[in-house]
Image 1: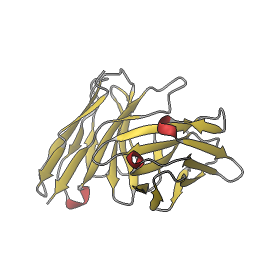
Image 2 (image 1 turned 30 degrees about the vertical axis):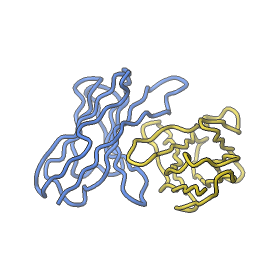
Image 3 (image 1 turned 90 degrees about the vertical axis):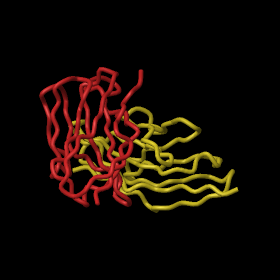
Image 4 (image 1 turned 180 degrees about the vertical axis):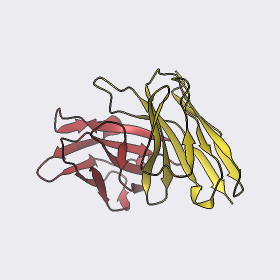
Length: 115
Length: 113
């Protein structure tokens, strides 16, 4: 299994540009999520999904859109990038029931800079 | 609502010394607690987790943590630090619905020879 994969690894955007961060997992996990990591802030949840067609907001959803059309993929869209969205973005996944349902598996991250 | 506080943003130890990283939590329900490690320019790796079984939890790389309900703490320890332990460590608690991890701000561990 490749686990959780993210592309691209690095991206530089100009203010106002749009882009999509890709996330895929091959573990058949129902739950997928996006976090952002900022210095001194830990990780904060942006959006999450508990299955295809189901998404919900996390702690810091503004400026980001998500959709979940398949179990494997959970892209994160920035419609109009702002410098405040400069961050490292992590995708994570897990099962939703059972002994290990609280254990999230993280991807390697995407480092985004908005100038 | 759940929350996590990590005491000390930076901890420095000598190789072979005890490692102690502190984490206190707030939760209105029995918590699920985690420690993750992040090596430079990498993702997060689960070190260990507490899910209401044994209060002393053993993880990977010789780390362990003890859940103390009376102190609302879940401190991470390792008897003897190794240079390869240098990384950032995050304590986290799951929300009640299991839909989010609430992270502390992280502690950077430095190990000197």
